[in-house]
Picture 1 (cartoon, rainbow, N blue to C red):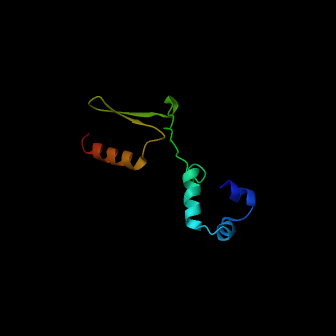
Picture 2 (cartoon, one colour; picture 1 turned 60 degrees about the vertical axis):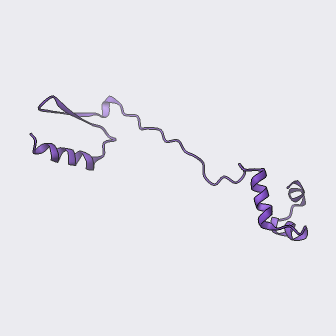
Picture 3 (cartoon, one colour; picture 1 turned 45 degrees about the horizontal axis):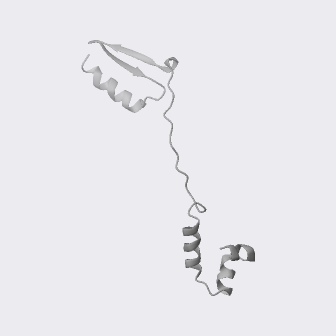
Length: 88
């Protein structure tokens, strides 16, 4: 690998002049330096921060309450409200 880097040639030219298989060259390049060709970076999502300022609390009969925040799935909330409508 050092010889190729020092040559300043492209991999294709270097492999041709040195009678090397280009596919094997790339394979060894990857094996010798596995971190060099990272296309993706692992991302660790952080859960959203919800403060008390963003909460709507709906009190229902039977000591039931529904907390609605800015992170609430509105489609799910709609289904819950419709379902509870028949029980009230």
